[in-house]
Image 1 (spheres, rainbow, N blue to C red):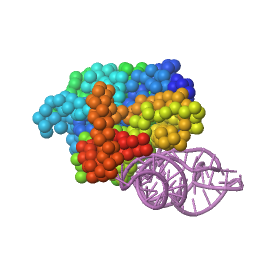
Image 2 (tube, protein in one colour):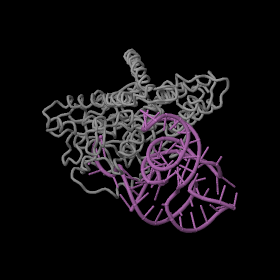
Image 3 (cartoon, chains in turn red, purple):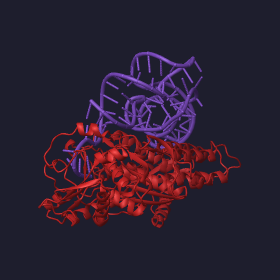
Image 4 (spheres, rainbow, N blue to C red):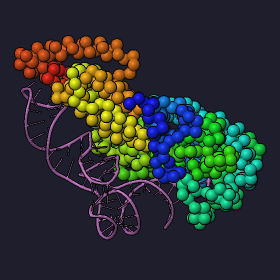
Length: 496
RNA sequence: GGUCUCGUGGCCGAGUGGUUAGGUACCGGUCUGCAAAACCGUUGACUCCAGUUCGAAUCUGGACGAGACCUCCA
């Protein structure tokens, strides 16, 4: 099966219809993909890893099967309130004052931090990574468009979207299933609501309070853009008035994405997104991750094991693999037990991959590699079913070991196909990083030669039944991070 | 209370109306000086209650339970 044979066979779960739909891009062979990126006001954590990895795989797979994908993932670096803050204070501005830094310095710092963590997770950079602060003009223009269309109003220097009017003309809540009347009924009376005609209205532009540092000029006031407008403005700019896939976390479904639907419908004359995809949340030992719960774990803490909840450090690839072992639409619970079992499974896959190059061809094949490859593609085509793909890879592991041990045979052709299939899905599509980065091979070759020498000496010791020496060699190497295993064909080594 | 996701073996997790998911753990075996790995095999599940059906973990309804979101705002 050729990779491009799968173009036109991908089904994805569309939040809009709540079912799997055949994916058809607007422009043949091209895909526009927009994903809500991080707000850069704090250290990257697990909540950032999930959508990043999920849509990284979407990006990788669609690219692999031959689509030209423009992947846009934004950086939110303006205009967001501190959680639980009484006053409407900008998250970034508040932190900046606390730390005596420029707001953009804070944003830059955490953006770099985010990028480093994403690199560690082997998450590919998007095609375009626009920053909200760099698109203030586009946002103002879009707010003006919405005002001109008559679906927004100015109040005390702020601009609000008229949800009631929108509901009457287009129907509100198509994406999230919210009913406007119920929303209003559930609204509590709070201060600062008087500017709005309707509690369900949302801000397109906010007038900045005097102490608010992040501020820009606009026709209405010195202020900052409302949260939802940046995604609409930037997705329109880079992907057009209508584009294929919009992704993000399920927590963004309402009100963020619902508001985006409102904005683009009015500003562009149509709802811009064809397929909405939402990844589910992550939990820590069954609980929501939150600062107040004491289970808020940053990615760096995971990589180094420096959090009381963690029994040990977990490598970035363990975390990536763990995330992909569950389907993106279900919650993922992080527990030490689950993480450690994932770690072992991943190690088994790595080990099998190492053995791939030493497989010896036979005259016939006792295993059907083509069918295996096909099942991998089918799994990916079925709403990116990465757990299924991983299960298939373990079937490949079984085959690799069987051939290695002589319980099964493969033709040279099938071995090639097995290699390609395994490496394509393991490395290219699931995005697991090869153990050896390119460029490390010289060092590795040198180490391998040295190791062959050591193992030869150990073999001699074993032949002389000098167990003390052979065990000492093994134990000392182990302590140095090198694992030695005796197999039928002699000893082999790997880095722990 | 509303909207939405979900409830599978010790743990993690796929899944189709009737046929082994897979990983990990456990147990037995092969191999081994020992260890590890690998291989073979066994055990083990579908929250509960109704209904549809020849047959449901898979469809429908209800109950119970979990999570996310539900003024502004991430």
